[in-house]
Image (cartoon, rainbow, N blue to C red):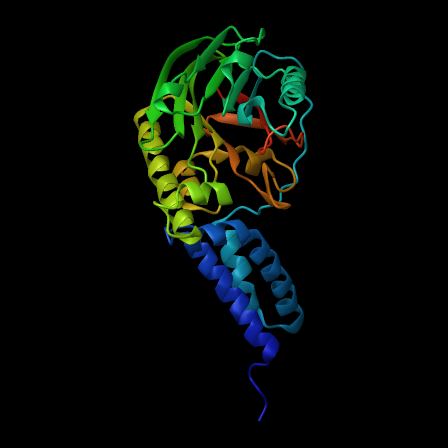
Length: 332
């Protein structure tokens, strides 16, 4: 009797099932399981694409299920877009988001600060959004007439900054409890319209031996810490989302989310917004390297009434995160 399934078929079904579980994990909070799948889902997706090709060649169409489900649920993680050459125009706005790690990455802090300032001066964004900022450094910026800095360091909050060449007409805080992480927003008059810019710094996993040693009373083990951090990110995302839902303004949500696009916090925040990388990005969109493994943890989520013209990822190695730039215009 002819075998219905061989060893390759069994392995293929396991791979397909793994991808389906990974997809489901992005919709639910399964703790550390969701976190691990959110990191490695692109890799699982690539394996399924190979399996899909094998299925087509062998006319075993069951192998197409995993890839089909992935494409139904997500945009592909690798993008190829044409960079638009922009002429100076009063209808085009450039915005940059960057977790600067206090302008003191690596051992030579003074050199890092000099190079980082030179880099920011070279791209001259109209709006500059910083996480883990450094006010003694950024207050020397001459290009920005308007700014909003979350100067509440005595409350244990990490410094967030928004610098703008356009008038800032309103500002606000969105506080997260029991953490140094936080969110702020600024209403900015751009192109005769007021848009709200959210600057987010969601909870970090801080998976270092020192962090685990300091928090050993709170966390029994690494997996528990990862699970509790994900729960904090979900709660923080919901707090921000409630604020978003209350405003009628066109919005841009940006910052260091500390979570991949395949995790629930990203899904909560994105909803009806467009992801600038998906619209106009190139490559993997890497903003953070996990021991060489590319991760996208920093985002621009844009109102659909805002047209994304360019999305650029940099690789400057001036912080543990990399900056991202978006050129946009407001649709009339």
